Length: 291
Image (cartoon, rainbow, N blue to C red):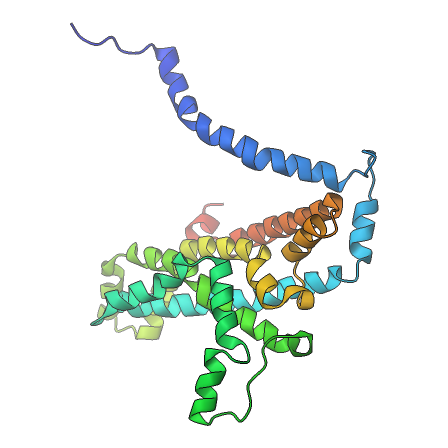
């Protein structure tokens, strides 16, 4: 006796039932926090609608500094990571002896949390850290280089950039390297037949076909850059304020969830705007021609 096939109505519901767990997760762990954050940002302590929270936000002495440093750090870190990840991806794509070992070594920071990475680099760059000990031992410096403290904010920024590039470049690399594997060798061989140089192959064959991967990598990395917090907080504290750090400060130290929600919404709006810009900027040519 054969198994009775499911009814046609039930078959139509199967895709929605399979999506239900994901939809429930998004509803409770993404949708509700967003709605609640909007409510906090636009209401006062008494629960009445108000814009006073945003006025307090913009009048805060740290707000404009946080906005400046968030964009400044992202503007330095993301291009460095993209260039480094692309260079390593192209190098490994060509292949050489020991390429697999280089791949695994390059991916090690991806397994380390941002807090752990910040602590590692703090211990390396502090006055009595490994870097200063090595440089003093080699006679390259006569006194320790100071990276931390309000008087050395520029060096704190350097420490943050180095830590973030070391920690998170692997995220961009994984996406770009996976995209390179999708490019057929036929295209490269055809370019060789027509006598294209290495630079011409990269510019006219690889980079155009890598655009979708670049789009995904830059969007994901920008979202993380707008939310950077732990590395900055550990290495610089409020010497170098960032938007996510100020949201944490207002929530945990000042105990004002309304201002914290304003910061969180601002980070979300900026992230959405940058994501939209990247979608337009890195739109593949075949999609542009199909408009």
